[in-house]
Image 1 (cartoon, rainbow, N blue to C red):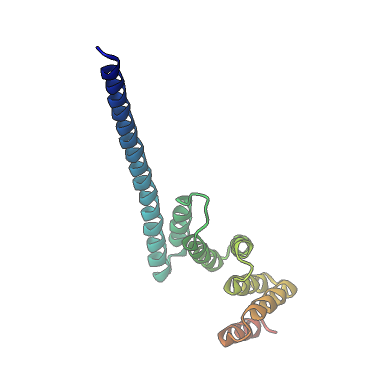
Image 2 (cartoon, rainbow, N blue to C red):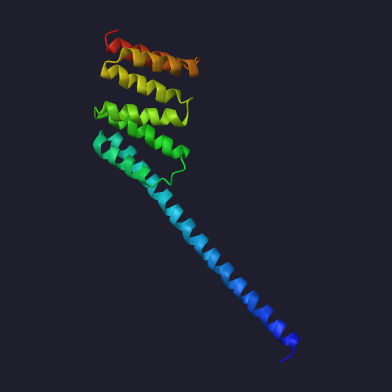
Length: 165
């Protein structure tokens, strides 16, 4: 075998190895993409189930569905995770688990300090717990973030009125 034939054979084998490696990497990426997509689909499925349970007034089942949905998060917080967390917080309020609701809405605020609805809801829960000062601070923050959102003023008025203030 000549030197050129050996070199050609080695180059051909190298190309085959590179091609095979490329197929393996492509296959692994496909599997990872499929697994990732599968987790995202499960997250959305459990979110949908949670909303369905909420619409029927079954807040305990809804809470479980939202917690399951969040268990499919990969650590990178996306808008859907915040959305699910908001629904979870509402369920916790409806179930009377006010401490858990405060933690949930606080977590949302920790991710987005401009989350006026989370400030409003945390204020509402603080008022339900009897902590008027904390409620007013959160209400003020919510209104400060969205001063032209008149619906917010109305909801706060109703909350305070119903609480006897």
